[in-house]
Length: 435
Image 1 (cartoon, one colour):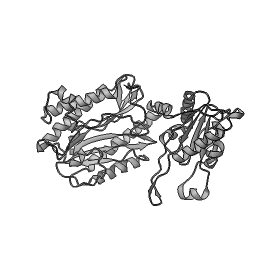
Image 2 (cartoon, rainbow, N blue to C red; image 1 turned 180 degrees about the horizontal axis):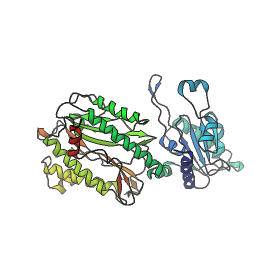
Image 3 (tube, rainbow, N blue to C red; image 1 turned 30 degrees about the vertical axis):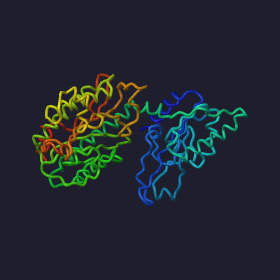
Image 4 (spheres, helix red, strand yellow; image 1 turned 60 degrees about the horizontal axis):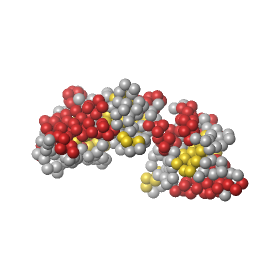
């Protein structure tokens, strides 16, 4: 995204901060995988949202108290030797030239400069407790500033979490964000289609996972949005199955929960299908219940609706199906009130989606479920999971089904960003027959 987009987001935050306020937004730390090998680096979403910078050891300061500098970045210096090993750094000059900030310093100068930016501020926006080392540096600078109070230098006496403003902003997706999310959804559709092509009896779950990753990377996605879940047979009843090591057998259902991250924006899609090409009668019966629930939930997505209300729709439709199939006892309202469905549907129906797969933003506003508004993006993902040890007719055991799409709330209702990925059972069987 162009630097002006990030600058506009910073200005929006500055406008919300009020007078004589300072915000400190740090980068994500690097993390060791084992010994001296680091995990792939992924920037803190808030910092990237406000700057577009994807380097570690960086800090953004926003100020309505400083006379000249409203946006300041502290970054790693250029270093010829380290850049040979790890790749280019933006450096101080590059940050000022390419990221549209007022000033930039080397990260080593943070302690020396921080007090000056805290001076004459009344409010500090900073997430306390995430980074103990940075906490100590910030509080040390505040204490040094406090000692100058007798000389007429004010210091922050109130600390608030910047998430109060940043996450509200991130919750409503702008046109640039939605463009990225639509592209991510398109890539994910191709990846799921490719996975259906190679998922056959005798193949392994990790082969399907590899095919998903191949398509993601082919289109320039930085990474999967989360660890891909590829669960066949009884593994489909494990909500976060991650080993992906089972060999698929004739008669298995395969549940794939996989999405990509493209330009720092996530998709999150689940589809379930028979690896042999056709649903068995019990599989189709469970699948139809989940699909009816999902379609009813999607119909409920509109401005003014709440995630609680949508979840209630899912619970009612799934419970109705379980009663009709004889998996739980009715009547329907009593089954819902006593949560008889819980052994087979134990998770929520929706979450926010954006830069994080479980994106930021509160679900409640002062104890009341938050009403959906245009620009929100959420998932709709009901499911039924009948474990292999469930005390039911054996024909149902080991069947797991989840169907998930990504929904954008619009002025008139909603847009299904992932509608291109087939989920109608006849369409699924037709696609599998064409492999």
